[in-house]
Amino acid sequence: MASNISFAEAYKNRTKQFAVDVVKFCRGLPKTREADIFNHQLIRSSSSVASNYRAACRARSAKEFYAKLCIVVEEADECIFWLEMLEATNAGSTGIEVLINEGTEILAIAATSRKTTGKRLE
Image 1 (cartoon, rainbow, N blue to C red):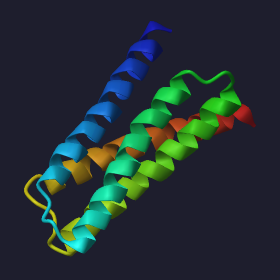
Image 2 (cartoon, rainbow, N blue to C red; image 1 turned 45 degrees about the vertical axis):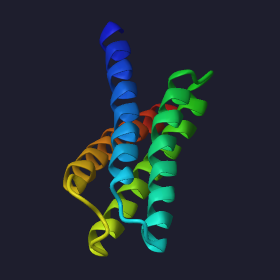
Image 3 (cartoon, rainbow, N blue to C red; image 1 turned 90 degrees about the horizontal axis):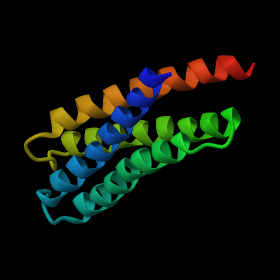
């Protein structure tokens, strides 16, 4: 049980750090209309990953935990989308690949947890 608690804390810290890193990255984006839109969406979705995983850790039931994990998966995937849009439009700055890789890893972990939790609910 202790390993699950330490994993949850480590993952909670990791998702929060991802959101912080995204904010810092977005500060370096050009001040264009499209970059402003991508910036807003990326910060919103990355902070949602962290806040919804934090809420999942406080879930009152397995179903509530599963529902929050579903949001984490959706928002992590959205983060990757916005990062890819920045990359594709050459609006992103140095460090975008690191964020894409971290977002992809966070997504994979959340998706696996969701799948495992979903099987337990069946």
